[in-house]
Amino acid sequence: MHKVGDGNRTLAWYDTWTDYGPLSDYITHRDIAREGYKKDTKVAELVNSDGWHWPHAWIQKFPMLMNIRPPDFARNDLICWRQYDGKLVDFSTKEAWESLRPRAPKVEWYYLVWFPQCIPCHSFIVWLMMGEHLKTQDKMRSWDIPVSQNVTLLCALCGIQPDTHDHLFFKCPYANQVWKKV
Image (cartoon, rainbow, N blue to C red; front, side, top):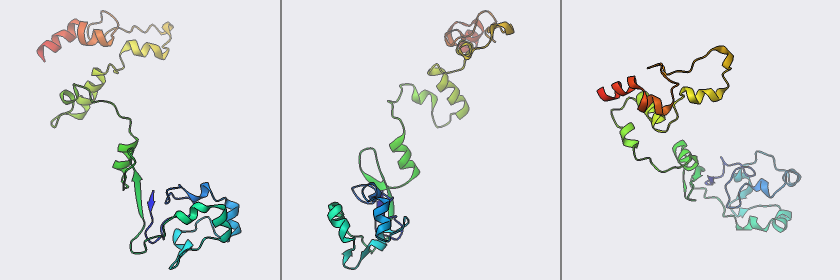
């Protein structure tokens, strides 16, 4: 959303600078061209010291134009971001991401994985492990590996049975020895 100051940086028709949204949602391209305006007309070109100078035909056709406050020439135009709660803040990529990102409750084990001295690569793998998202062989079977290739999908650590999340972290004898030492 644009907060109009002097109107020199805000497109009149396509930028969202009114509570009604972009004016192009209401005023057709034909109406804009008929009145001699261009597609890149700035808000500053639609106002003078007396206020708005909308074409008379538009005032009757679009009465909401009379409700738009004139620009404040004392400041520059600002680009703002409307947060998910409706509050307007100065635009930043951080604010945009915070508004757009999916939200989920924090998991209980978050601080066991992510902490100030963590090694990011290790934390990422542990995060995948805790969510059972590691690409173990039982998950890779769904990738349609042809059986005719004599591929034996056995645990790389013990070679006894196919590795699954449950086997790799809880039932594999070799992994159990490693976990006990850790």
